[in-house]
Amino acid sequence: MKFESPPREHGLERVRQLWTLWRNEPSDPGPFYSLMATEAAAQLDVEVGPLAGQRIADLGCGPGFYSRSLRDAGAEVVPIDNSLGELSLQGEPPPGFVLADASDLPFPDRSFDGVFCSNLLEHTPNSPDVLTEITRVLKTGGWGYLSWTNWYSPWGGHDIAPYHFLGVRVGPRVYQMLHGPPAKNVVGKTLWPVHIGQTLRLLERDDAIEVTRVEPRYWPQFRFIMRIPGLRELLSWNCVVYFRKR
Image (cartoon, rainbow, N blue to C red):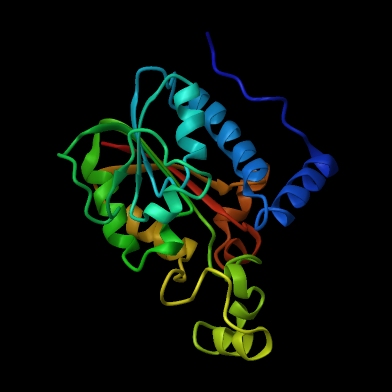
């Protein structure tokens, strides 16, 4: 039986839906991430599926929204995070979780059919090492899904947005002077700038993988933006890269 997500909104209704869920995300993250997870699993089931029977690593899984949706699609999922606090944000950690650093994974080479990595890169100081580890643990022909909030997008600074446009040194200082310490994401401690152009260059220099598609996560129909350096850093909001292990 094919895995399917609920009907997807379009146009202005899509904008309203996402804006409402995203605005409420800090106090009630479940509805936003559940929608994103269900849509991602359904899309992957079409793109790289069927997911049923595939062994997938969910890097930076947090409380397991994506792990749950990928399992609903029939995949064998290994939820991975380096923080027990993040794993427990919604109660009990996801079943079968592994407490590990994504830049030093405790798995042999070619362990997974797919690696799903959503909104992790901006929360690690070692994003190139994470990319290397993803490639290493993928089987030949395996797929990778990489998504992150790029620094110059409207939400790139997370808690301190829009002050992040002032830079990594000045922005946090101005924010703290006006508003006090950020609630969660601290630049240089739990949040680091990650840029689309720089990340794509790292991936494209890796002969072991082939980038198959790059698009804005929430508005994939506008993927032409990703071909325009500079503009893509500002307008994509969240970048998605699909790739394959050669």
